[in-house]
Structure formats: C-alpha cells, structure tokens
Length: 52
Image 1 (cartoon, one colour):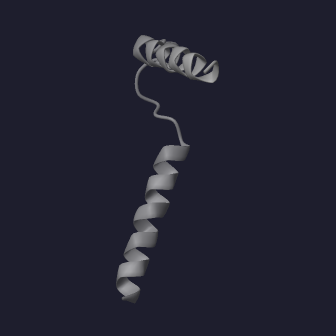
Image 2 (cartoon, rainbow, N blue to C red):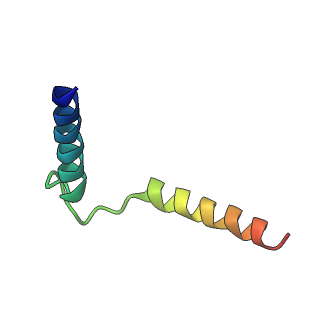
C-alpha cells in the first residue's frame, strides 16, 4: 500500500512539474488560431446563456 502511495505521489509530482514549465520546442511567437476560435465560440455560447 505504501509503495502504491509513493508511486502515485511521484506520478502526480511529475505531472505537476511538466504542466508548470512551458515547452521550449518551436517558436513561442506562433498564434494558436484553433485555440482563439474555440475561445471565441465558448464566449459566444456563454453570452447567449446569460441573457435567458
């Protein structure tokens, strides 16, 4: 049981570490058009539901 808990703690710590630091691959100046489009769609959907 202790081995399982330690293993899970290591996996969670590694995932948090990877998620915290940005990837250094590629160019950081690239604009993600898909993310912008999705955010615009979500904002539009949210705007429609707030006036009900």
